[in-house]
Length: 249
Image (cartoon, rainbow, N blue to C red; front, side):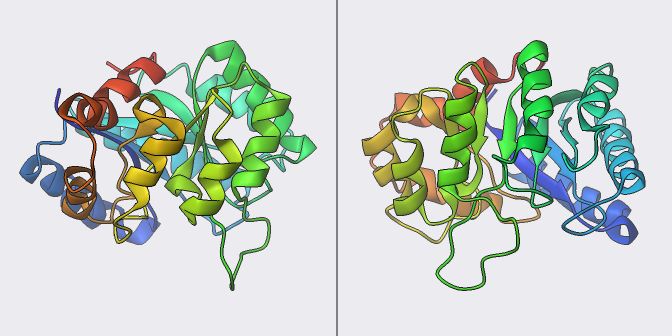
């Protein structure tokens, strides 16, 4: 296995068929062996039908391309049903983790049952995280929110997405938290991002992701242009993900 892209999305119901074929083609062209996908339907605060439609679309996608695609369960912690949704969808072998986006801050009390279920099921939770100087979205988590939930549940496997968006802010927040990993997706234009993260958290806690339909090649270039050793690059590309996602086959 050469590359595990652990952060990819289906965004729009109407473009689902077109989008997934473009993603599959990009993976084949760039030697991606596993693609972990969540579907973000229903805007920033999806209702329970949006959540069901999203997760069912991911299962359908995974079953259509079983040698490549695996799923991340999307939930809205605002609903009391979120933990039950995790339990139900983990009955499907295609699902390997959990994805939270912007419906709530990731350290709100309503998130606790989801994290507790993730601990029971031994699956990672991928948390959207982005720190902006302007335009911060309502209930958009930053590295500080990620650190709060990670400290509350030190036994949880937490992934801070996008190096926290602003990696100087995000990495500082999670640097001393061994139960937090981070992925490089969404930061492919930042030359120093991987080197800074290597220096502050080490190669064992960095994951390769693209935020597809973003650019696979740009993210590969970001790793290749870094100061990472060949052994560290292997960890980033796939070895860390294999250790973290116990259900990944």
